[in-house]
Length: 358
Image 1 (cartoon, rainbow, N blue to C red):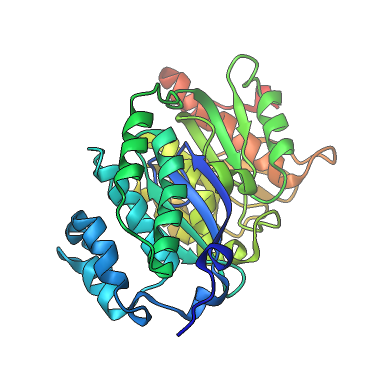
Image 2 (cartoon, rainbow, N blue to C red):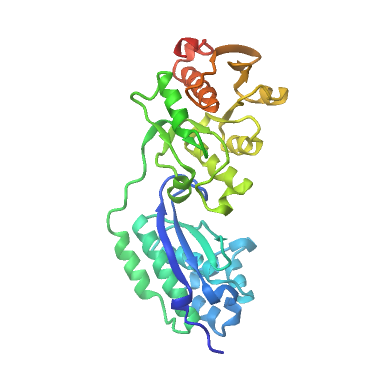
């Protein structure tokens, strides 16, 4: 059986470090995009001696539990038949383990086309993570070609990189992070108009940036999700579940017990926010908010006629009139964000009317 050249068919298309909280993890990860060409349909079980060569070079793979959930799980997958991207993920993790780095998180997912894949994996040192991705690709290519004779050179190279200074972690604290498919800049402007953001950062994080690089800061006082209509990301991330997961990433930088502002009818995002220990404030550009949603939300902003109303614990406060100069959603969310920040920054004045700021 003559196999296609794996160095031609299995190719890296992008590689970068995702440093902040991201779509896949709250931890920094490497993201590697691959095309596999003819190896879309060629598994480890199709190549005599493939599994033995990989395991012989990296016996520590026996400790990888994989989706089977027990020691030896990945070895079982190798013998049964698994594919190049998944194998590269595990090899990249094991290379780091072989130099003493305690890493274990990884994921492999299909791309927009049949032969495209995205894989992510944890790293302890960014330089080591980047290089381990490339070395893992080479090792798997060699295994498919039948020319893998060891990984000592790769381990030695990574050990040397590990001795170099690492990129410092993101440590920036911002006032507010805003994401969603539209009206981010207008919402930021509205918050500034309410008197916030002159000295504190309000960060507009596009979904495409969030997907590619993760959050550009480590902590925020509050976060805002405007919507899940994401036109700037690949089609598969526009699907409801993935879009919800992506925009909910902004909650990962908010302290436990902190507040994330979410559309009133985006219940799945609200659940994700609560799962990471944050409280939820909700908004609508009309008055269509259920009694139950009002009861479970920390506070609610809505529009009745042309008036912006904020409700909390059954008390309604009129905070202004909808104007023509800005999108309605930006005005409503800006008012709710100002209300929330006032409460957080001035506990003694909690619940005060913010009409003067409008």
